[in-house]
Length: 373
Image (cartoon, rainbow, N blue to C red):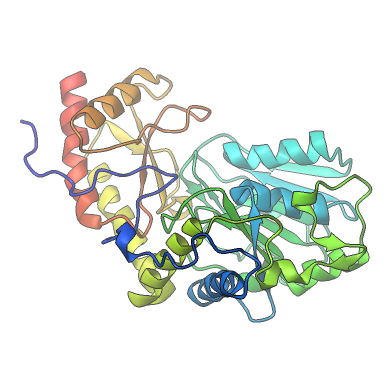
């Protein structure tokens, strides 16, 4: 029988992700629209966003937080192009986006002393191979595999090299060891449901010292430059963005960050995401024809929840048909997995998703599976 209960909100996309509960355009402050991003008011709004970000994510006071053009990609590229070169580099990859950073370091920057640590989809690579004398580049959460590193214990606290982390779908939904991070990239359209095109880059004092003492041998595009005439461009991290930002996006992000703080901050956001994963885990345990793409529970993401069908693990036909049917029914939008990964469905379980909506959706997946097969 077709389920009666429907999710109140059918948005389960893994990026851009669902807006925060109760979101409305009417909640946004529009006084900044049409203002210059160099005006005192405009800079003040940008600084307010940075302060809220530092507060909600519990970023240390001596770390630098700035807005970078080009979403998380722009922030990661700025870190890679500006910081890598003086030391060997360990590249940890276990999803599509992690391998994009591998490509950029190998093919674009053409660094020679590279150590690739990767694996097949559904598993974490051997993190014990990471060396503290090397720089490290990795993605914390793999949105195309549903794999996440469970913690930062595998990263040496006294390492010589810098740690550059793509944290886009992990922040706001997991506890983060900032003292082990040196350059962290993310954007607003993932776990807090903000608008796209703007990236965030957080730098440690060690990363800033690298910028002051090392000049890359390659030309740096203006959008990636974190220094000017050999000096660290501190003003980027004080509200003076490299290019013109969208104040509509900034106000939308301020709204999302304020919501996160109002419900109890990072612990509350983490709890909401864990509750979402728990609901799906219970359903998978009771459903013999589906399984997590993440083989081990300890490395299972609570945000990008990837599921594959046991009877056709290498065939896109079934997940495509189910995703299409549920979208036609208006109960789930954009749940087909990333097509450059293995065939799967992908449910976003970040903190803006209501657990009740995920709970209502799961019987619909069961219904669609029976109807199609």
